Image (cartoon, rainbow, N blue to C red; front, side, top):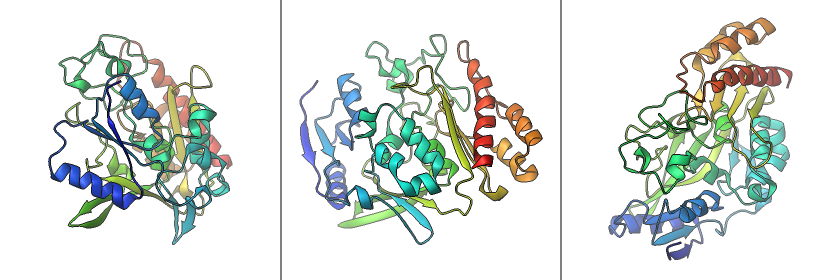
Amino acid sequence: MKPFEYITAESFEAAAAFLSEAHRSRRIPRRDDLLVKAGGIDVLDRLKERLATPTRVLNLFKLHEPDASRRISESDGMIRIHPLTTLAELAASDLVKSRLPALADAAGHAATPQVRNVATIGGNLCQKPRCWYFRSHDFQCLKKGGSTCYAVEGDNRYHAIFGAGACHIVHPSNTAVPLLAYDARLKLVRHADGKPAERTAPLDDFFRVPTNPQDDENVLGPDELIREIEIPVQASGCASGYVEVREKQSFDWPLVTCAANLNDRKDPRIVVGAVAPIPWRLKNVEQLLAAEGAGDAVISKARGLAPEGASPMTHNSYKVQLVGVLVERAIRAAAKA
């Protein structure tokens, strides 16, 4: 591992000011010269794999911020989650379990207990893709500035079936799937004109399919940080469900995930994960549920409709069937909640 300078920020404001100064003074000659870490699960992997060779790492995990008991709260019609909240804290929160059960399930099934005790919700949303060609030092793929997506002709069993461009990555965040189903939005902070400046990004607009494979998978600026996650309180918040399928039940990445939020049929959300470069909304299924409800016949129809538009490759066509199965299971779980 290449040596680097390790800086621990005392507050979000100090961290934002540090990032702003680093970029303003052009002290960052390369894109990955300065990395930001929270729990550090993904960052440590990237350092070990030499996907990133920074000269400085900015640590947010020791910020003088609210303790665990105050990182998840409800006010002004919003459930607010601090970005340094760990997945274990989310899964154990009575507020999250009662109002956002799909999020509690997603957080509680991620990785292993040891990882969940350290991994943060902010880091989970911003982690890099897990494509094994991207992660391998032996392949100079499109994502790393090469000329070939090796997944196209190679081992593509875990790659995208929706929304892929030249690069066939899938988004690795399991918590992003229910958060998008709950219509979450992010408060982003940066330092401008000597003071913190915030903007709000709906999660629907935060993730993006990179036009250039080397671009980031979200719109977070190089000098921005996630300051807070906001989720509108819904009277029918319990009418939601989350399901996933893995090859093994512990310390494994899901093959397909799905979150369903029926939301009194006013604005149902059906989101699938591990099938596209971003968490993927099935708008055709959403429109069906909004028009016809969630009866048995409609749910069966939704199962058949869910894979519409999928473009599987040679080894991942099984995901087409899984999408339909998980959509049915998630909607049934939501309808029974």
